[in-house]
Image 1 (cartoon, rainbow, N blue to C red):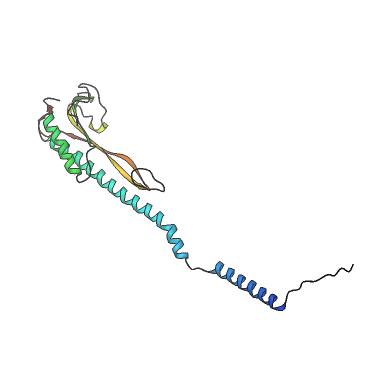
Image 2 (cartoon, rainbow, N blue to C red):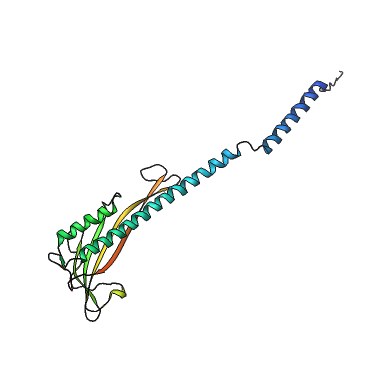
Length: 211
């Protein structure tokens, strides 16, 4: 038996085609690695979410700061109005809550709390509660109990009015996959409150007839 061996060889045209194809592929890969087309779009897509988070965060913080200033103003105005008289009652104090809410407007003040406390400082500089009132129109504190006040106000034989106003504010933050009612947003409730101390203007004390 005669074994014949056949050697398969590529034709010159096939070699030429393979060489051209390889050269084109190398050139294409080189252009792709060096190309800067679309870099701006990619950078924009990466930066925009960060910028949105910073923008929404800055806006919400500015709103919270504005509300905080309004709460401080509402506290001082309420205390100022009460100390201009020699006596008060639950009806008048309830009106002060309305005044405080009007100062905070147009922001939501439905969660606003208010507490007014008459404080008597005795001859030894010890402060005790003379009367108290809060937004529920009741007396939250016990008359005669000691109370802590700033040292600067512990002046013997004086009367002091403590007015406290606080309210909740929903701080909206943009976060990836945030919960809450809006997709991508997360609400955090912060409490904004102020305490204001003021001495009476006319009489030695300010009485509350039905507190």
